[in-house]
Length: 210
Image (cartoon, rainbow, N blue to C red; front, side):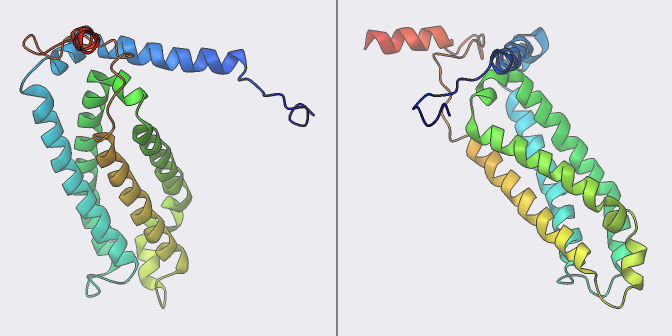
């Protein structure tokens, strides 16, 4: 009825409060001494980012090999259970590295990530990955020996592999695109990145002076 009369629905107060709380949490996290030290170091943040990329390479490689085996496109001379079981440990190590480094990078620049559309897309895809794990864990990943006993690779295993490849590829693309979005400096409240680098306020003053 409201739309027919040309009226717009405005977000309710509960939504405004939730968004405000998330933003406040991001600002609080990035301004803690720990994350400020990471952001203000010449070496810490680049080292964390490099380690994050190494973790992605390890974890992504394990995911790719596992999914290609489930699709029957690689390592056909090895049983599915053999591939899945042997790659489970290095996959978990890679995931742990990625998660720890990701949290450190997020905490040090939380407000920048909050405003980044590709970071939000990445979070949405990660939620889809979690749902994917819940759906296919019992029928595919937790019991690969049952897949070996089948006459041919079951359709559910191939579906799980295809969705896994698409989701992780999307996450990788979204993560890469995050760096190409310039943060809104006028909204960022982070402190100094380094004593020798300009603050957000000094950047704003320089812009206004021009």
